[in-house]
Image (cartoon, rainbow, N blue to C red):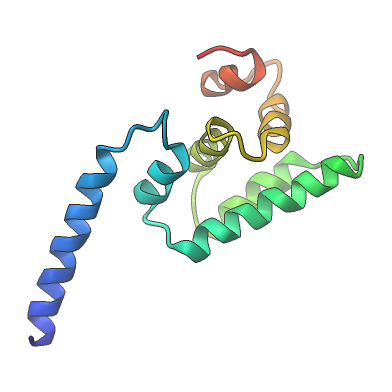
Length: 125
């Protein structure tokens, strides 16, 4: 196989993985769906967990958390925008991971919480 054939095969595999990712039930597998939608590798999901763990530790220690810093740390780490930060927070929350961090971040918007976070702040689905 030459480089051009390898490149075509790689593009085909990427397309197939994207297609498979679209079939994943987000409610049943929110983090897996997130990983595929963001084209993350193992290092990326580990980095996200590290950021959430950092803020979870601050909450556990009773420290005040600057949620603006949390958001920007995610944005800077992954080169993403605000909407993708919301997707990450929701995926972890739906997967019952880092729920205190997810709740704290969602509550930081009160009283004008984005509707996507109502399931966190108000128990709505």
